[in-house]
Length: 125
Image (cartoon, rainbow, N blue to C red; front, top):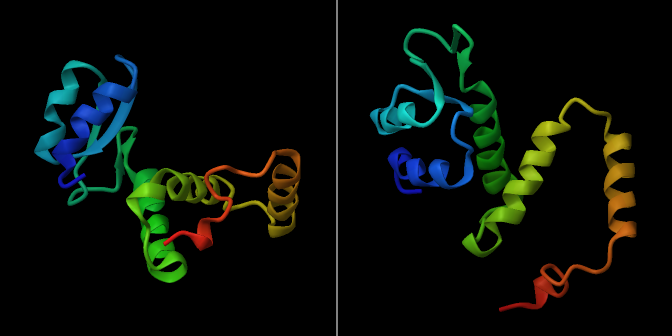
């Protein structure tokens, strides 16, 4: 997305009407009040107030930026969904011991067939 306001169409497409959405005070989100229970937070006042906060989203995007800069060095649009899924998994499991995560990842890798998406990834030009 080039701007936060571009996310309105994405939200309308993927989020059920009446859902609770948390957003900051950016004006681009105003139109969402008509379709959702929108909880807004003004970060110049507080990070969490009256059950409204964007801390989870802020944490996720900070983790995604750190992964791109420090781990992957570049996240291609072609594989964005896979990278986003990996980072979401890391965010969701951040408080679990590394051994547990290793067992889950290894178990999942052994249960499923070779990925048609990732097989030969490093050989592509």
